[in-house]
Length: 354
Ligand code: NQM
Image (cartoon, rainbow, N blue to C red):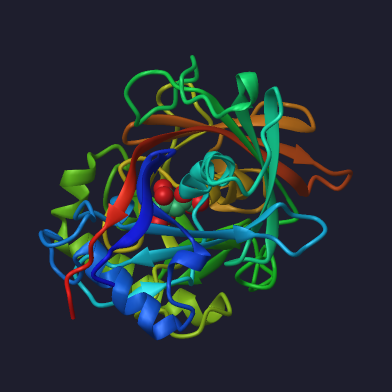
């Protein structure tokens, strides 16, 4: 390994991560994970001896290979590398890092670019579902420049339109793993939901906060964090996720009435740090909870009419629009979201030896 490993460091949506071709990493999972910990510099709160950004949102890995499946161009495995614990886990997917997969696949020659826009069909190993990403390829090559803006990222960039179908229950086995739009845990009314990401959705006021606090303020609230974790550990088995002590799911989203013209306001713990904005599948799952009769979110949300709804999820950095398409019975059948992505560097990463 002294020669280093080929790696592209990319921003995907509001996250950053290391993107690898599967063939450039060891096949053995334990060996691979040891190596990824060294590459990111974990465990260490500062990740000082690695390339990780000392934040769960910048300590992420994408492993990509050409797909053998008829329905997909590439397979994408997402791994979360914990910052301060020696844990590498595929127990969740990541829709933000997903935004970089299409450009990476084209740049590495796994997908041939068209002139204009290139659709990339991505099999997500973590959930067994397929996402379609539309990549800007003017002149037959990836362009990162453009006029799309997403809250939480400065400047404008080329759009990456993501769409998903049938992601409900991809980790929990059902959209509502308990069969209920509302359960009660420790006296708090919650919706346990998985439309691409297992989430516990509850009113901020029931947790003793307004839901409009900053990320820093919420992270400094030790009593809140302890209460969220107690609820999370109880929610895990109810959501068919088993013991979630070492897992980054479910995500814990506290909701409040919208105050900037959106559908709902959110603050999400992922699960031990507060998200600077909100995840992609996290936002889709919360938007779905808003469209669900009988959930605390539906009573609070301000939703547009119609079968195709743009649901603006407010978060600490602005808002994120999840576009939901509803079926005849009001169920969410597909979802889409606009992201951007950017290649930050492409080169060789040198893990600490041993
Ligand atoms: O929900 C953070 C992120 C995510 C996940 C997290 C994500 C998603 O913003 O699809 O994107 O919830 O751990 O990268």
